[in-house]
Picture 1 (cartoon, rainbow, N blue to C red):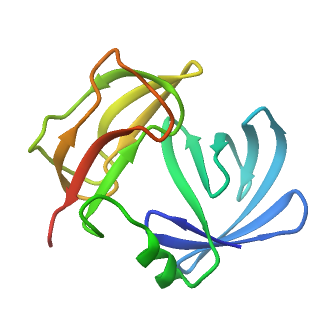
Picture 2 (picture 1 turned 180 degrees about the vertical axis):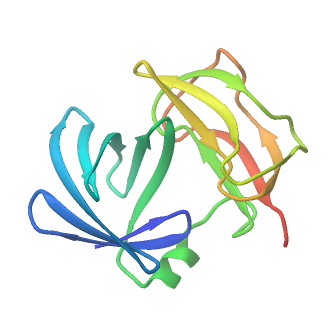
Length: 166
């Protein structure tokens, strides 16, 4: 199965409770130790990891160590899935959405700010978890639609960023 993550394709191969994931030229072995109510106990290359997962069919939100990743299933090639991924303003912009319903605990940036890939832009609390919404690439904050204390729904757009040209 091909999955898109951070505009790159991951090839996942399953044989029951174990998976082999290939991203670029790196391969990792993933074993599902226990799965219950959206919580996964995983062994990734022998390292214990807890992940929280929610989905709506084609998309899966995976939160590990307070960082949320959006995975989308794709049936074509990596370049096809990259081209299909749409967001505001085309391939150089990204709409950052709530991975699950929750409450905005902090907004750490302002419109017009330059941010670095991985920088925490906003913190959301959901199901007693702190979810950090992070910049997917070096970018400029185009708009912020969320406010501290606001309750948001899954897939509600929180922040829009424009990719900085290199």
